[in-house]
Length: 106
Image (cartoon, rainbow, N blue to C red):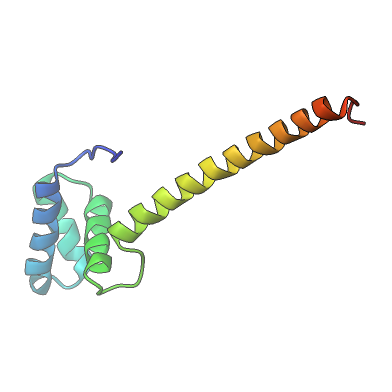
């Protein structure tokens, strides 16, 4: 289940594209991000994160890509569910072992 974004994907892509296109017109990437964010009515830190995520996804910056991050999230969820099921099975095996044995656990 994906989380619904506050901003449409088209706006995110447009902001990243604009920063990349206009980076040379500004003294730094941060200046370009600030300028574009102001024009689009989005917080500059939000645009910076979008640019960083795009750089990671395109292999220009180290980090987990969006697909890798989603896969990791799924594996962590599955791991939690399996651990929980394992604890339930352990509890059930102790319960049934004591029932079959006829003695109470100490």
